Amino acid sequence: MKPETIGLPQARRIALAAQGFGGKRHDAPGGNHLQRVIGKVQLHQIDSVNVLTRAHYLPAFSRLGAYDTADLDQLAWGPKRQRRLFEYWAHEASLLPFDMHPLLRWRMARADRGETGWSGMRAYAGERRAEAMAVLERIRGEGPMAASDFEAHKGQSGWWEWSAIKRTLEWLFWAGHITTTTRRRAFERVYDLPERVLPAAVLATATPPDEEAHRALIERAARAHGIATDKELRDYFRQSPEQARAAIASLAEEGVLIPVAVEGGRPAWLHRDARQPRRVEARALLAPFDPLIWERDRTERLFGFRYRIEIYVPAEKRMHGYYVLPFLLGDRLVARVDLKADRAQARLLVRAVHLEPDAPAHTGEALAEELQAMAGWLGLEAVHHG
Image (tube, rainbow, N blue to C red):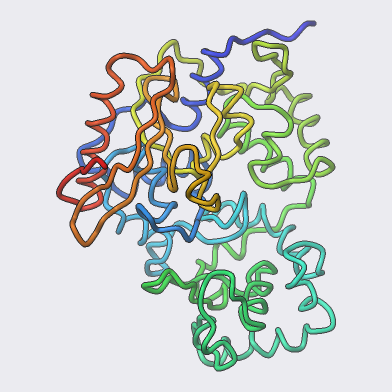
């Protein structure tokens, strides 16, 4: 039977509904609302850039409106009894719900064997393992520690200035020997043993066979996407084609994934539970690392919106700006805005606005309202253009 063809507007609405857009914004969204958002998107990507606010705070604001970021901090780094999230490598460095922990232990095991992770870390799985275990024992004996707490790391600074101790800690983290217990003021990770950070019930949950974990991850990616290609499904949690192939086939055979074609003929999969709304009334500024748009080819196909982050592009060669957020209005991406939080002057700086050629007439008004909402959420007193 020939797969059903789904038009681009409907595919966009399916994707937006799956990602939690178009719902009612609450006056004071709390922890339960945050957990529902994370239940839909499955993770919040972490990034070190703090031009506007930390990237992991933005997806919930885009979907909920002005929530208290302290609620997310509590879910991620609060007392053990209040935690619901943990840090690990998923799409990239991410905050994840606890039930994801067993599904990613295959990645921890591969890192422990030196089969994954950055090349500079892999030696700690082999010839430098004793060195890594000595660091682990120091944390076990002395309690939570950050890279800056080790004498060997003193004098090192900056994201890219990785000392041997930082590489050691990163390998221990990838391999699941340690996890993040908190973040310090400069957003530095503080590490501790998983059994002292995560609830015992999480660690006691059985580890599924690798094939079951990959199947579960693909199913979650399909729910989060609503509609997606093979590549998009496996990219969500960074699975390889080999890891994803059997999982996709199994889910298709069971009817969880329904083969469809998106307008233009590209084969895709529709999750059987995906909502197919006739309209989506959304209004949101999107972080560069929002799961709706982090797969740039998908963003271009679904929305006709070519988006690249230009942080590392020399200023004179940037097309749109340094930290540019796409603006979602209805079911379309209609503009991009270069923003910066000027905390010293309590202003949200709008350094540039670029409208799409087909942006509707009310885009400016809607964007102004969203910028005011973002400024208030960030504790800034004014929106300043220029």
